[in-house]
Structures are given as structure tokens and as C-alpha cells.
Image 1 (cartoon, rainbow, N blue to C red):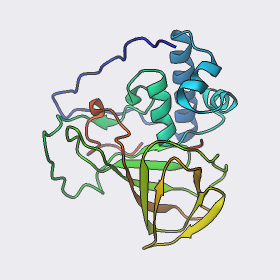
Image 2: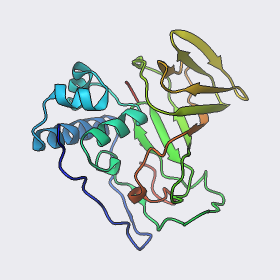
Image 3: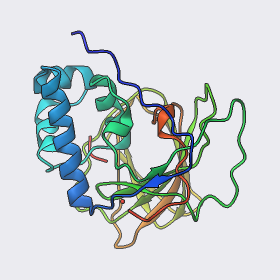
Image 4: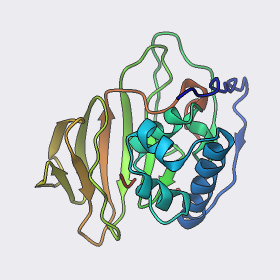
Amino acid sequence: MIHPKRRSHPIAKSNMTTTSPMDPDQQLMQMGKTIRSLRRQQGLSLQDLSVASGLSASFLSMVERGLSTLALTSVFNVATALNVDIEELLPRTRTRTMPHEKMEVTRNFARNLIPIAIGDREYRFLSAHIEGRTLEPLLVSVKPTTHAEIPYRHKGEEFAWVIKGELVYIVEGHEHILRPGDSIHVISSVSHALRNDTDETAEAVWVLSQPMVHESLGDLTLGHPPVDGE
């Protein structure tokens, strides 16, 4: 299957932020419509996208109709399968800055990062866009689970350290309860999923072994408050 050339998006040279807040349901619906539109533009069937992304056609159909959520890793897989930058599928509330060549110091970041919300989770990207980086650290907030996440697999590794609340991490069918101070390190090619069985939002620092966002996204800093599955 041949995809059209990936569209590139130049990094803005200013720190202007574009804000278009939507509630979670609106975001899910908009993401689904965007995926369906891009798929149809490229002449792909749901089965084609399923093969390219590693997600089932039935699940993708539910995502396109706004009936199910995607994990951030799966959003990345769908964007890759559609040969577009992941920013095409995510809310556009963010600040873009030039990447640093080899290092970057970020101070007092946690209180100012713009969250990207997908379903019951909010993701805050903690890293600068250093060229050639292989780690993607995130601050993830997980609201009480209302719809069970379908276990999934992806390339690389992931590490999670719970700093607030309680999370249940399911790895190959085995449940592991994580409380503040607990951590888990998983080879992501094994089946895994996550849920929050409490009635309070939990938070964890996540580190993925591959960058989940194209360099053109820029740093997520200083902005307006806006907001995973298989």
C-alpha cells in the first residue's frame, strides 16, 4: 500500500498560541471525523487503516464515530499509518517553539503546560524537542474509568511512576495496583492496559522510549486550559 508523501508543517518562529477549547466529547468527535476524512482522502478502507495501524477495523470504526477513545500511542500509530503528523489529529491549543540542538532546561513547567485531553486522560509533554531524542516524558492525569480500555501493544518501552491516586495496570491479563511511589516498567510489545477504579483523578509521570509527537508540535507551554482506548 502506497501512501502519499507526508505533509510537513513548519515550526512557527514566534511563541503565539492558538486556542480552540472543546469539551472531551467534542474532541473525540472531531478526532474521529478528522481520521475518517484523511482516510477517505487517501482512498483507504477501514481494513487498510487497520492493517497499517495495527488496530482492529471495528475499533477504528467506533473511533471515527466518536464512540471510543484512542490511547496516545495509538493516535501516533494512526497518524503514521495515514502518513501525516500527529498534530493533524490533536487539539491545536499549543505553543510552538524552535527545538534546541542538544539540550534544553525547562523550569517551573508543570504548572504551565497545556494538557492535551483524549478521553479520560490529560497528557502534558515535559520534554523539549531535542534533535534525535529517544525518550518522551509525560505527566498524565487519569480520571475515573467509565469505559474499559482495550489492551494494546506498540513498539518500545514505557515507565510509569504514580504520584497521586491509584491506578490499575493490566499486563498480559495480570492486574497490578499502583499507588503513590509505586512504578512499573513494561516492554510495550506485550499486551497492556490501564484503568482508574477510584472516584478521584490519578497522576503519574510516564516515560516512553520513542517520541510520540513530531518535532513540528513544538513545546507545550504557557497556555489556556483546554483537555486513550486500544
